[in-house]
Length: 441
Ligand code: FES
Ligand SMILES: [Fe+2]
Image (spheres, rainbow, N blue to C red):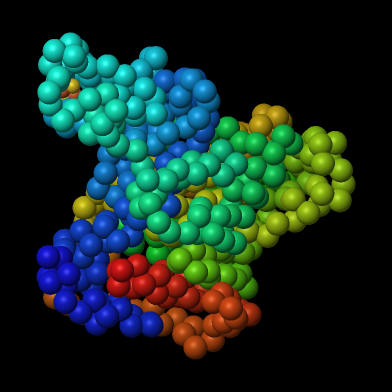
């Protein structure tokens, strides 16, 4: 049916440009949910969101409302948030504890944490002679086809076939290794609440922005400049001539000018994933960092410590729904709601057993750069909305991704941007290449 509505998808995507309908056509959105979000590995949450038996967290995968839940044997399950009886949503709250089992609020069917039916009121008398019995799958909550946990990060796929999580992530798995390895215990804990922002724009606009190295020094210039002015004032007044590090998180948007962004590099992988290298100078020599370094050296030894803190990543994008800044313990999950509405969940993490000051740094970045209350995020949100408005008009047919086209270095399916082409639109070309492959089915 949809296929008939979109007879020739190929005409929508060229190597360096994309038709505007890709962002605005509701039929294309439906097909994207079927062929991309409800097939591939989607991040559900971190295991520390559900520490105790019965703890659950709701999560949207494509169009499907799902539940991530901890069972009493410690295992984590991902279930459709739907009662098999008459379809009632099992958990109406965003998160909570189901107790020893799920109990539907409508007719009290109950279920184990893994979704298996536990009881139906007066089942014997009510269902003898019917096709339904305790073992029948129609009486259990449906599970996600596949669930995998990598270092505490739980993913689900609603398709029973496909690459394993590790195969799917490929080199982008570094996002989780880099984040966890920076903890003395090799583990992170989620801060169990997040900002949720509904953007009035298509989900791809957000993802394309994540590794768009050209935009920060333009879009965020005014914020960066203002922060830099204050930073200089404070520095003048202090003995050492330095302002707190958090000012740098903002002023970098002005001091790292466009030409400097070109010195960074993007590495583009199969399935649309991408890494932006470069480092915002966050290995300073302040007392907090030095104290952290000592804890890490004690835990890992000097050699391994150098390897860990030497990982050169600014940002990892895991297509089609995750943006990770491992060095600052930030993660943003993208949940498309409709063709012009996108939910982003903005999370941050604590490095287990690292000094509190390192957590405060992560929290500062979370609040100053990624939260909806910062000017940085507000700058981006306005662009996203304006992009969607412009794309909904008849003012043009195409979106261009031609910057530095033809200068990419490709080897074994991995596309690296050439030296001094960090502002290349290669990540968007790579995402749309993956999009087209998924959409062809
Ligand atoms: S709808 Fe859940 S028990 Fe009836
Ligand atoms: Fe931005």
